Length: 412
Image 1 (cartoon, rainbow, N blue to C red):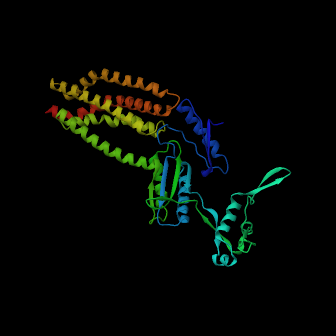
Image 2 (spheres, rainbow, N blue to C red):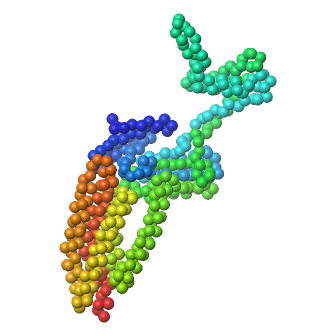
Image 3 (tube, one colour):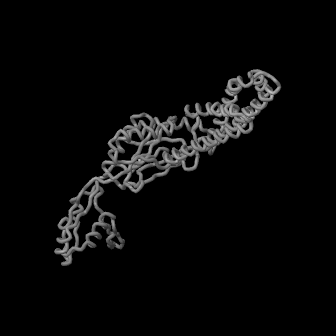
């Protein structure tokens, strides 16, 4: 049995969850439960691993379709997008809100005829409401016991049964409701949403493990573009909107930060070549975490981004110290290659000690258990892969790049 279960009657759904000691146990449970639930006929279900981040309780993918169109057309386009999403193999679960239209009845009253027969609308409303709500009409006493008298219609209500209800008239008689009213049936959605002031349909989805958010959103975007939707709009909401906004802001901040770092280093070294040597360490340190995220070993979120910034700062510091020592060797009259090798030998032990210290600090995060274990594991994994990979690659790439950029200057 799950550790907790919650029934949501409005969504006709049940949510449950398990608690595991380590992220590895949770990942294995996700794989087993996904296969077991997928084998159940007539059941739409999905399994996700909670990261513990704030606001990550909803389905990660959420898009909207809106426009001045009928509910039937919006739902039809959403249904085609749902089929395309499943066919792509990127999604474990896709749902449309509101769901498929339900058949509804609308009571149409002939007011002129009702007025001539002396039937008031208030009486019709009272009779229909009492019949549909199982209202209590009163009490009767049978052998000393008080029994409630309740008006109840059959569970499977037919229109003829409702129209046969007796409605009182002003003359004191009763007439069937069908004398002055009729039922009109039509398919209508429960309630269309609103996005940018227009009727909208929302699509939420859970991608398979290892499928990037950008890929999942791109799949839905292409499915929308494949439909005749020139008069409709496609947009993002919830976690997907937050993801896109954060990516746009991060790209701008990264560009400004990189430019600021370049000019700061150029002012420090009084050279436009040396900043390239230091900045080259950033992609080297990003290669390990990038491979880790693509392989599904971690997710890109605010916590892992902070860890990545930490790795960039430490690796860039190593590049700065290398350039300083290399310039000292060049000032002593050493050739570019000899100055670069001298700097690499002198800085190897300090750089190794810093790297080992950070890797040792990441071990408890990798072995974390209990609440928030996933966040701590992602943090430790990014720190370990970024610092380890950056250390190994920078040992060869930084001296080689220094020699490449400074060979003409020292040769002259």
